[in-house]
Image 1 (tube, rainbow, N blue to C red):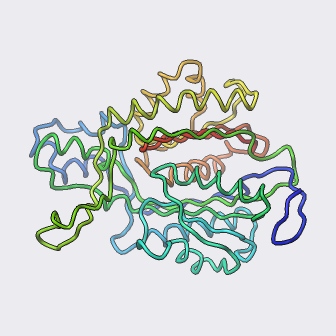
Image 2 (tube, rainbow, N blue to C red):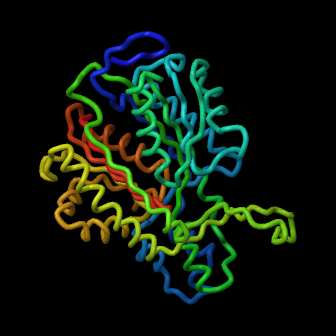
Image 3 (tube, rainbow, N blue to C red):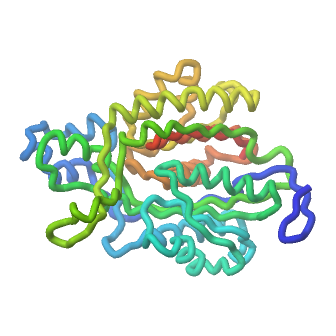
Length: 354
């Protein structure tokens, strides 16, 4: 028994009631990115090298004037429609994007105004690419504790703005490869209390190793003595990453997280209907799943989007969920495993019955 806004409410569980994704129409191929970054002309790599090492052939970028809140709003409308929920029925709205319209106020305010969720408490939540899956856990906690009955998680990403196009050395270019595969977009989930005990979240596991944060850094503030000589900015928006180190650190957490959540749920990998995972690159999925021992059985049921959309950061999970639902692969009663590795490093695993 939980209390929502002073009223008693019987809650059998918590589930995802609606999903939405907003994908910009502009398709950018990896060949175009290679040419603009000068990978062949400036650094001597053969044509097609970037696609071969990442498995990403294209991604979507938003128009220059589009803000993260706009992408989140468009995805939010779709999620509300999918759930059959009026904006005024949302108790809490959480913006979970890495990129945001401004440092203050919370970008959630802009999304809430645009959607008309006037009754909602709003705030931002950020934890690199795992912001949205952490938002799911927060939404679940708010609902189970009686502080909300229905939560909208919305994210919008303009990660294409973080690319360093002017790398001066091969080493600097290699540190920018992770940024060369990013995509823009929006995603949203409606999380709500369920009266059906057969639906909803079953188990979850979240772990972090904060000693590994140096492997990937974006949007770092520099000392004022190192401000840009041209514009005076102390914010370095470029994203840099040691891909090999991040890969190893993320997998070292992901494997035990998967095992723990599956054991707690009482499912075998053969019982799963569909698996979703945040996908930094297609090669991360191809190479990483094979190293997960018995969990590698989940690979055949993984919904792949990285080859077509690149690294969608916090949008990758709602995009994959929405795509699978539209394709008929995600249906009521489906047994689902959601995985999320992230810089920091963090790892998450959630089981649910759709």
